[in-house]
Image (cartoon, rainbow, N blue to C red; front, side, top):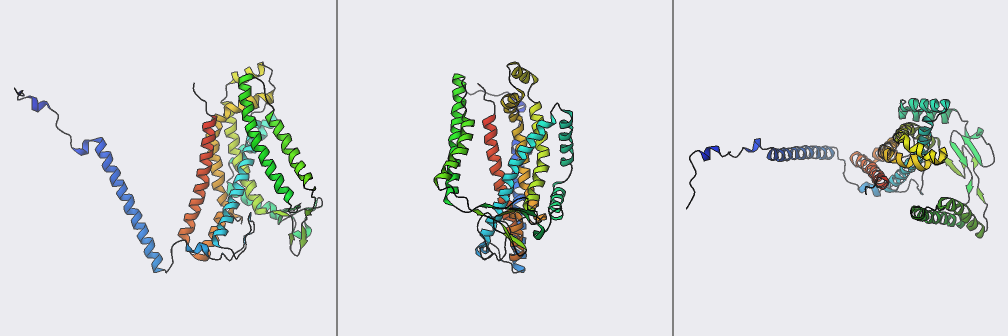
Length: 398
């Protein structure tokens, strides 16, 4: 027997709301509209760009990368000449950017940590000097600092003919710092591989030592043993290869030096500017991280007889790192991206090399795209590593 609804029941049932009053449906519609707008604008820009390129008879694509570059690069980490291709020239520029960024990041962390700790020193003079360094360097634009150091290197030092020669094998002039290096020999590559192997073994030994100390309470001197081995074993390898001592000595020939290795003013100015500017921000990050550690932790460490250096190394910094790492990652990324300002002082980084390539080929869109991709790769690689390290240092809940 079917139930009969009363006449008023249908009136009380809520009717289906129209889709423009349904938040979920509205959100889907808005997203579709936004996607269509983006696609439309992208298509317009692409078609307009293609039409302009065809009208000016400019070819598109990356086929030009296999052509001869026909320009020299002052600083290279790999062999390069003007007869090489644009691909190799871009590789040289990318390696130059990577070199200054990596060295800059290492020096920035060291200098920033020192200044940040000095900012908290109980010594009034040290604390105020650190504070003055931070305030001054943070508020001078990095580009001006690059110009300043570049001018210092070119104006304060003499020409190659009047180069300063503090001792045999070292010359300092406005072309850079030129110093002697050992001549190529199989001993040095073997020493390098042995040194790398010692560091790897030392890393595993240090991890094992930490686990052993957690279980038994007995420390294992992995760091000291690794340091001693890293000095003695490469020396032993050098002796086994006959103790080669021949040096590649620099000498003035014509208007410049030949031989040895040269650290150019452009590289030095770029490195100094980036390190000094970024380290001021890193110092404040380190200071804030140290101050985030509770005073009770420090007092407890001092109560069990730890010296101030041990308190900082064993108690304060390990806890402060959890606060320091995320903003430190941003500063590392800023330093890498700021390295693109090298073009202003003539350092042959990736941006400078790509700019030369664009001027020769007219492939501006492809060149800019390559710059974006390379810096995106550097930034994402740095972020991935720092995120891994941050997760490794995070507190594990039990």
